[in-house]
Image (cartoon, rainbow, N blue to C red; front, top):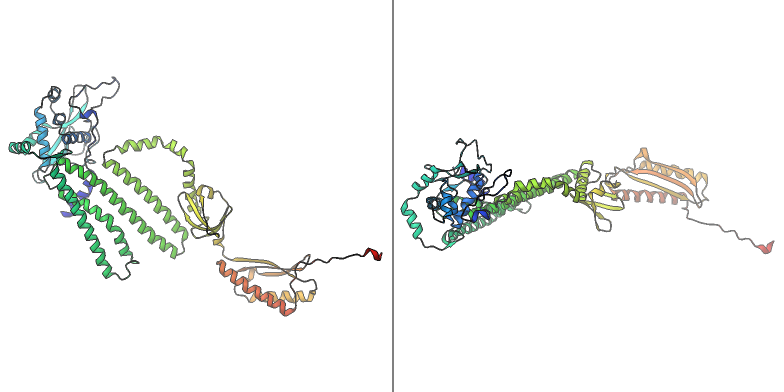
Length: 535
């Protein structure tokens, strides 16, 4: 049962009734709507749907405007009484309704109320009735019903049903009404100040309790976990406790306040803001959870040398966080009573204009998807991208960061990078050694033949050289030397290792030249001077 209540509380927190009356709804008399014959008529009190009816009714009760609240009861004589400036029987009934709600009555959450002019059709009630709450305890609860009525201009409106009005009269005894009228307590924003103080105190106590409890839990875990900074379980609990504690504060506040006989205005107002805090806590928790999972997966990908998979995880993490923030933002707007459906529809209408104004952004986003799909480079690769040479440090949703050899950081838009020529040095499976050795012209043919034989033996005996591709040949007669060409591959994927192998090979060649008495040529020029006096 406790678990069921917690689940119910978690659902109700995000679906609280919100008061957002229109300016017309705050005037006492009801004026006749003026509109063309072909235009749909609008109710200035917003009684077209069950949700708008409850919202307007609660706002009238919060303002203490019981004449306006009387217009939400199903009685055709109400508007006449309000127009005369007198308090109708329904206005007195509105006082009793507020008192009944203050004495333990409940209303359905804001999002659970139907926003359809036809109401909820599959609730087991007649089509013209809609339940919006209840009076009394769960075992003996009396439903609060709305009834759809048709007014003289043919407009359908939702109002408090007559059977509910009778139940309100029976639920609130006359002595309770007299006590409420005689009570002389300072009212703040439509509710007694003591109710505000009590509810705020409950929230503060709950916050302090869960804050202290989370600190003690972490301290206890540190005693049992040796290397707690590197322990993934401890790190997850440490990251999850702050937002989880904040969410539990909201749940506790709802469970406690729902059983108190406090003003419905104060209760619903604070619960509205508590719902916003709960959405923030959930978004905070989800963001930390996404980061924790991404760190674990990225670490595994790096250990397995699956760098492209690590890049995909990073991209998905950023996309998920953006989507989560958008959802949380929309949920908060809905909680405070803004019509997010209209806003989302407006986004569809303005989508074309937005796309035209953000062509580069969309191009970069498509470019990032192309990079992840084609995988020309990965994070950690050393590559040449256009004129930029360096190590890829990050592939983001808009740009790619490259660390150059000068340790500068170059940001390349993904839209440009996808169309650039990319030379990826990190995917080389071997390293090329292609050099030309120049020996002096006083070297004889026999010496060159012996040198070639010895050099081929050196290449054959070197385990770091791939034999099938290795060759050394007497290549050409140069201007200042006889050219001997080396063409071979080192068996390594590491650039530093290739430099080490190249160094060993060069030392072997130099020693062999010294052993055979062959000199390395350098650019020389012979100048012949002619003495004209000898002629």
